[in-house]
Structures are given as structure tokens and as C-alpha cells.
Image 1: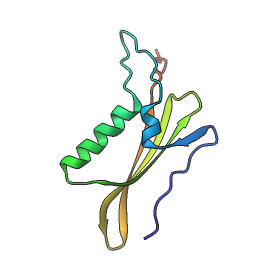
Image 2: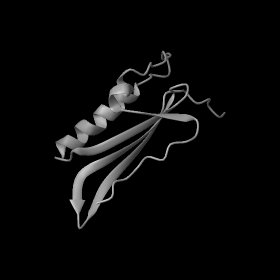
Image 3: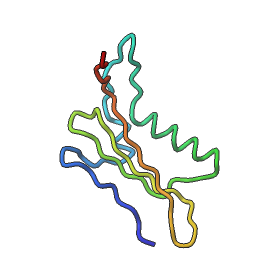
Image 4: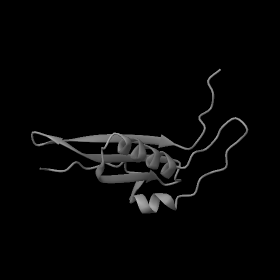
Length: 99
């Protein structure tokens, strides 16, 4: 069965889940709580596990400043030669409000 592949943008670097743990997280503010990329990834994996779904393969890419993360999780659920995949996109940066 062919596997999926993360298509990373030109200004990103591919990293492993282990490298994602080492990514620095900027400080939050009174109105913006910053959640590290790895915490979101771990929460997704844990939630999938509650449903007896495992991650078969995962790939990540981060922007040069580390604020944006893109991910692809290929799930260990198949049917008739197909495999499910889950894409993630996260940003640590607080976007300016549009008032």
C-alpha cells in the first residue's frame, strides 16, 4: 500500500516528533495562552488512542521561526487497501485582532 507524504512549504524544515519536543515555545500573554506544538500532537494521539486508533506514521514541518507547524498522521486503520490520514496545522503566534 503506498504511503502518504507531507508536502512541506519552501520556508519550512521537516522534523520528527522527537525534534518537535525540543522546539522552543514563546511566552504567552494575559490574553493568549501558548500551547507547545508537541502538547497538541500528544493530545491528538491520546484522543485517537481512546478510540483504539494508532498512528502508523507521522511527519512534521515547522516554519523557520518555529511558530507554525504542519503535520500528517497516517492512521493504523485501513479498509480495502486504503489508509486514513489526519492533517494538522498549528500556529503559536497570536494573530492581530481585526476591529
